[in-house]
Length: 88
Image 1 (cartoon, rainbow, N blue to C red):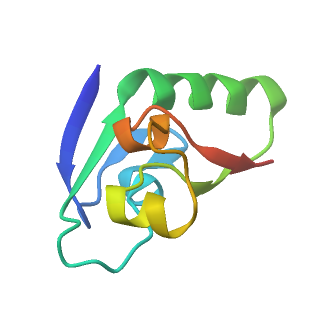
Image 2 (image 1 turned 90 degrees about the horizontal axis):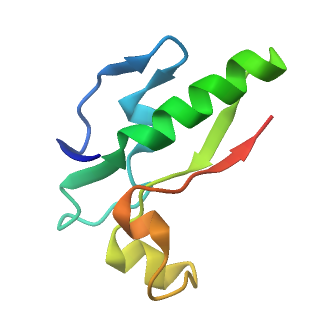
Image 3 (image 1 turned 60 degrees about the horizontal axis):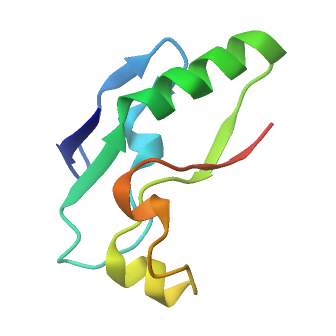
């Protein structure tokens, strides 16, 4: 299920992930919300436990303006909060 959060809000989502990690990385004043699928958080938490190493989120939710600026696809699932670029 996709949830809507105020950008900048801090909230512990799981034992290893905080909402701050999933906010859009842009500086656009129009970007005020973050959309995040709870299934994505659950999936990343399970992977974190399985591999036993930290997972760093480079980018998760993207607003339309930021997605366009970085050359993201028009229908990117980052726009819906269902994707994350990670590094282990």
